[in-house]
Length: 169
Image (tube, rainbow, N blue to C red; front, side, top):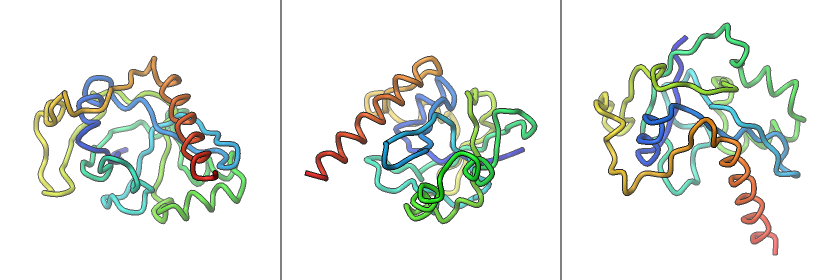
């Protein structure tokens, strides 16, 4: 099954090096809890996926990913959310520029680079050749290996908690 993953130029080098290894799936906003999974979508449009508000443009590139839809690590977000999220959390995710939620999928595992079959610029519409070297290493975000995904997730949750604490008081 061909699906898409949107990302920034700053993340291309790390993805090329390690594949798709991380993604934060909020499970409870009030307790700042989440799980690690790679977000995928069937949508050719990068809007409506909650990608705004980052320091980098996470809508800049569309990766076409070939996944096995019969793999136990793969699920439709709507189905997973109904069983794993309370209604308030589901609504908050949709309200945070998540109107494209009906097209979302989750992959609870590693997507190796070999499963990324194409990379397109959403700005030009053109296929990006040599995408792993498109953006200078000095400006690229630190890559996250599959083994390092839990440390990445802990840092992400910690940073969100700190930011929310600063906003609250």
